[in-house]
Length: 236
Image (cartoon, rainbow, N blue to C red):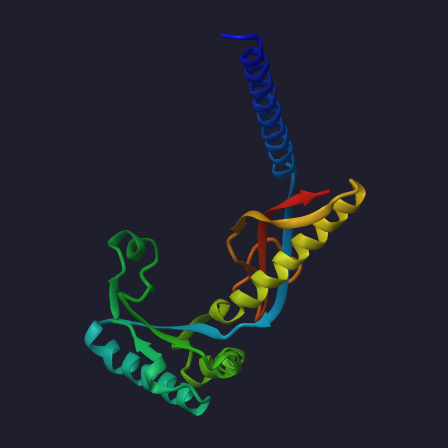
């Protein structure tokens, strides 16, 4: 191989290394640029009213024999159903539980012979989206106890919110916007700009009572909260 060929080959190899060096260097810069990101969280909260309620009304009577008690508890149950209808509760929202008969134990009768020998109890459950009607009925339970001569023994109400589906898109968008605002602050502090989303995950929607870390079934007001976690690229 003559001297000219050696020179030509050397030039080609040098050019090749130069081109390779350019692409490798440019690739490393791109890797470095895409590797810069910030991990932030965004929060969205909404205050809402409960849109569902469960009301449980307990009834009980005591006496000498079940045969004598059944007509009495049946009458009490009818009074409860009439009361609920007057309060605007739909019949389709009412469920009547089976009666339970309990015999007083021999030991209890020995300790106190005046105790009734039997008790018959039952429950009337209301599950409704007519929250106001259920609340009004619950507030009048004492009147119902008087009307039934104590046949209604107690009642509980629990409020819940089932409309997360209607808030989901809006709240996730708000949480993501909040996360981007946090990313923008990080970017400004580091002399960068916020780029595209690299990765994102949605937290679980939480429903709590206002000002509390857990839900209170007795509270008609609810706080809906969601947190999103987002990775944003940072660009120079």
